[in-house]
Image 1: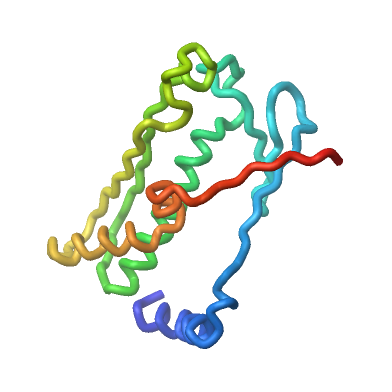
Image 2: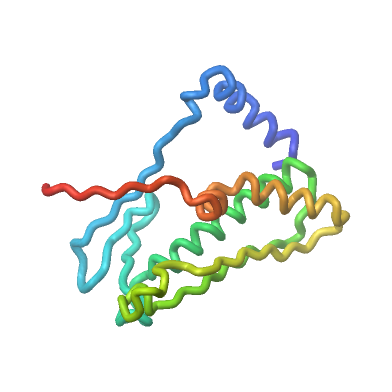
Amino acid sequence: MDAAELRAMQAPIKERYKTDPSAAVITLKAKGSTESEGISCKVETGRALAIAGLHPATGGSGLELCSGDMLLEALVACAGVTLKSVATAIEVPLKTGNVLAEGDLDFRGTLGVDKETPVGFREIRLRFEVDTDAPQDKLDLLLKLTERYCVVYQTIKNGPKVSVTMARV
């Protein structure tokens, strides 16, 4: 796909959203079930079933997926797709590209060992490694636009309003 094909594919969608902004508002959903072996949760990904469990640092076996890893994987997936899309749109030829995410957790917070230690990632680092002949100003623009349009990156960076409820079934 080249820049013209990408623009042509997205043009009617963008036009619809301009004329009907409510059409652009879509609720994404994730679903899981605790009906699995051990302390784990089956997550329906839309393509397969993933089983999330405790990280080995909190007593898990390491056989199930860690939700922290899944968060970083979602970031890598979104950033990679966004990078390729933006590169195509601004005509930056990528010979190869890698997207790497890493995050630091202090499990004392998660396990309640130290009430002052925050629960969650204290820092997340996202890195792109690209092989391209594009000039630096184009790479700078590629990075800027990838950051701007990556949904998962922006969600993590800006911390949206989140609510939690519980209901009996």
